[in-house]
Amino acid sequence: MWIILGIIILLILFVIWSYNKLVRMRNQVKNAWSQIDVQLKRRHDLIPNLVETAKGYMMHERETLTKITEARSEAMKAGSVGEKAKAEGALTDAISKFLLVVENYPDLKANQNFLALQEELTSTENKIAFSRQNYNDQVLFLNNQIQMFPSNIIAQTFHFQEEEFFEIEEKSERETPKVSFTTPTT
Image 1: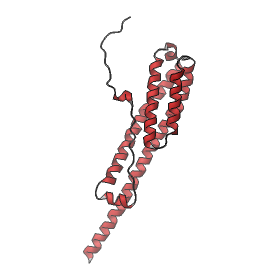
Image 2: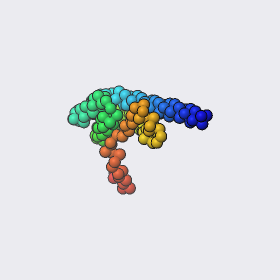
Image 3: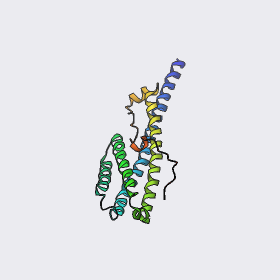
Image 4: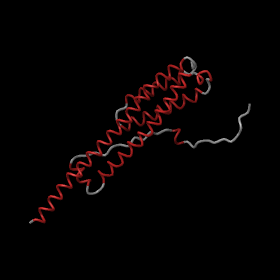
């Protein structure tokens, strides 16, 4: 009789412990996502200032500036994690192309306001990458807990859902960096 009662108490404690662990992991995922969201908003706020600064110098590059503005709008409208990842990837590509075009405008590259915005954008990109890594780590822990036995029984009973990874498809990250050892000609 005492053995059966002991087993029932252990099972109840296991359910409570597993449930609380899943709730804690789900909240960690939400917290990690909010960190990404803060950095993405910061990036979205920087882009109009960057474009406005460049407009005066890049009169013949309207298409490039328009693509950044459109990509920013799409990124701001994206809803799910997958949609945001796709839209942010497109925005990153548009910014990369913009920064390549900027190389053709030495006056713009020397503008202190532009340089400060570019530096802030670079800093924000680094923070986004760090936040994205943290978010994906938290999603991995939660998804493992939801899929592994015996916690998967508790997860299914209480309808815990697997979360989606935030994977930005950046063409520039997939390309192999080119290294050149030639000296520049003067």
